[in-house]
Every structure is written in structure tokens, then in C-alpha cells.
Image 1 (cartoon, rainbow, N blue to C red):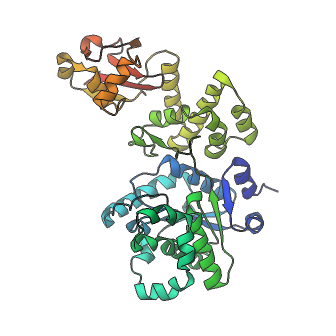
Image 2 (cartoon, rainbow, N blue to C red; image 1 turned 90 degrees about the vertical axis):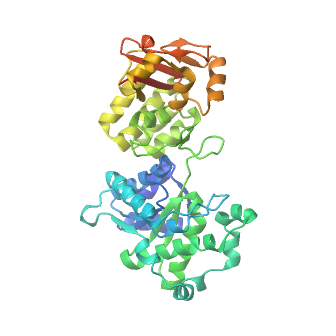
Image 3 (cartoon, helix red, strand yellow; image 1 turned 60 degrees about the vertical axis):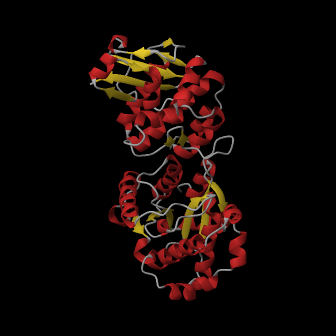
Length: 410
């Protein structure tokens, strides 16, 4: 008898809340369940934040359940107010459609959509042509405004003013679940814990309208020890698209997470057996760096493939071990003529996003946090030319212990 996927998700640390725990566990143990997760197409790539829900989908599909990846071509036109202090800026239909297609490409790397093993749907197909009066009669009648206003997802927005426009979001997401239940017998909605109120809305709608069981389950959100959402850097989001976040930068992000988060991330974001996860998570002192190497390698392998993971690992080891420079380090090239004239160190740091501003770069240099070709520098007026190239024909700038960038002439 194979292990119930509910127990796998629970042991690995995914499950935060569940509407009917015993029923859901029993259901997942006895039949192939069609479930869905929604992805609002607010950018042209999935992020590290999405990756946790993608991992959950992969576990569910491996256990014989059928995922529906629901692209939010319709809901993105409103914008989810959850966790937002301001209203989202509105996006054009063309941008949303483009983003939804990019999501489709990326999800296909992780989920098998062949032979009806998974479904890719887009809520634009049913939301954009709704008749408003019919919608209110059919759906709005099942929602209590008092109950909605008490929902966690609206609380933050109430202080600044929640528009009626956004207030409809919960009804639209609930309608999605009801529609997927009608079309595909979808019984379970999964999502991040910030979606709990919206998910309950859909569960209750199906139970009221159809007199049928429906369930919701939420996952923990990846946060730092301070409670800030993980997957953000000085440059912005950590993307799954290699053109937006290179495999090396992606690897380095996970290589540099807090020690206290290593075991949790190994459980959630890799397929390593839990015995190994616990063994690595128990390492202390300098040994925890080995666990971080394993974590970064395993996640990069799932997202970018084994070859890119090996390259990123080699580049990281070359730098941390002070060995040979590697081609996989983030690199910027300038015309040779610019190096002949000379480029100041602060410009190079700003161009490489090693500093958020010129004054930030100057401060870091003064505090002794910058090295050029492994030599610490304290002169923020330093001009670098082609005479400063190392034996590989490059200038390597390091900020702190973990941020590197390589400059070459073209």
C-alpha cells in the first residue's frame, strides 16, 4: 500500500489548514482526486514563491491525483487584494494573455499534461463573458457581506479603503471552484495560506449550490525568520525563468538562506527522503553549509535541470573555495574601448546590482566590504582598466562574502 499523499504533504511540512481533515485524507487515500491551484498572471514568469505550490502539485500528481492549473486570465483583470495595502495596478488583456502563456510553458516542465493526466484551464473563458445580473442572482445570493468583511484577506485593505471592484474577487475565485467542479468534478482547491478565506468561499458555494462535498487545503507560506516572504532579493523577485534570474543566482539565493530555514526548505522544496532532510537539517556550525549546498543543488536541478545545477554548484565552489574563476558567474561585458578609457568601481557595482545606489556603493567600499580580484579595496574613486584584468581576462568584484560579479571586454 503506497503512502497517502496527505501524510507525505504533512510530514514534509506543507499543510497549514484543511477544511475537513479526516474526509480529505480518506478521499486522497481511496480515489484519484481532481484538484486545482490558481495562478494569477501578474508577471511573465513564476517565482520562487510559486515553486512551493508547484512542488505540492508534483507530489499530488505522483500519487495519482489530477491537477488543474488554473491561469487567472479573468481574475488578474481585478487583482487579488489579499496581503496588499494598495490596489493592484490594472493590466491590459494582451499583457495578461502573454503572461498566462509563459506560465503554461513553465508549468509544463513540472507537470505532465499529456493524456488528461493534468488540465490547464484559464478562467478568462468563463469570467469575461458573465452577465452581471445573472452572476448576482446565481452566486451573490450565497455570500454574506458581514462574513466577507470579517475575512482576513480584506482586513488590511479596509483601513485604506477597499473598492467594490476588489470586493468581488472572493466571489470570482469561488465561482472558479464551482465552475471547475461542474466541468471536471474538481473537489479540492489548494493554495497558499493567505488564500484561506477565498478557498472557504468556494467550498461553501459548491456545498450550498450543489449539495456536494468540496474541500480546501492551504500550504504554509515560505517566510524568513522575521516573517518576510522568501523569494525576494535586492534585485527583486527570484524568478523561475533563467533569463530573469540566472541558474547561478537562483542557486546562490538558496545557498545563502538562514541556517534555521534549511531543514524546512529541504522538506518543502526537494524530493529528498525525510530521513536525509532531518539529518542535513541537524548539522551545526560550519557543517550546515554542506546542507545548504545540497538544498541549492536539489532545487536548481528541479527548476533548471541537472546540467545547470552542476554548473552553478561548480561556480559557487570555485568562488567560495578561492579556486579557478568559472564561466558560470554572473558576467557583464563592456566594449573594450570603455576599459581602455577606464570605468570607475562605483559604476561597475551599480551596473551589476551589487549596490542600490552610488552612495550605497561608496559606503560599502569605505566599510571594507568590497574586493577586486580578491584584493580588498578602500578607494571609492578607483578607476579600473584593461590593465586590471586577471589571467582569465576579467575583473572579479566581490561584495561581502557571497555576492560576486565578473566583468569582461567584448
